[in-house]
Image (cartoon, rainbow, N blue to C red; front, side, top):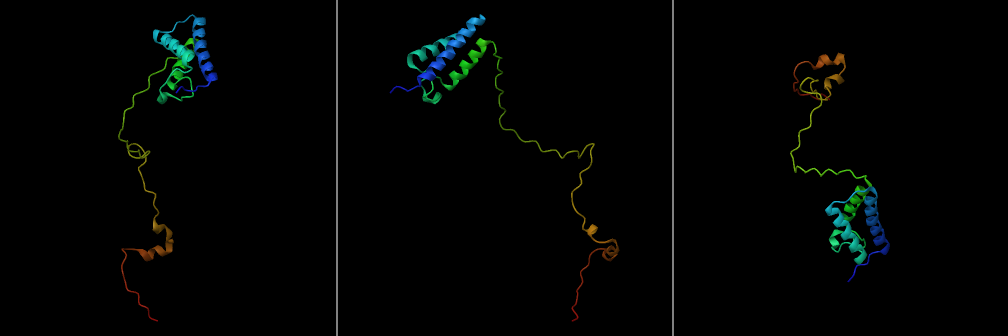
Length: 146
């Protein structure tokens, strides 16, 4: 069961390959062995089959190039134009790490000491009534004389 790839997409991909080769020749640069072999094999498969890959896990079956092939072809085309910058390899991930506790701002060494944000209930009592509430609290029985 042959795949159905849009001919316009195949032509567009083939033109990109040819343009990359022409740009490299115009600048007088040569591809590395791997790049030249890649470009030639992709061009041959596009001409013969209309697509350069067969594995459905590697890309959309309606496209002529797989995702990786498209990415590598972009890199080769940029190199051919002279606009390619060497890409840094991705950084290795370190895996799971323990989280560091959050700092408390300027508290501790050299800064203001931490004070809780609380309300003193004695501030609600007027000055003249504060004299009634001196000393420790005591319990007493209030009798209703009615």
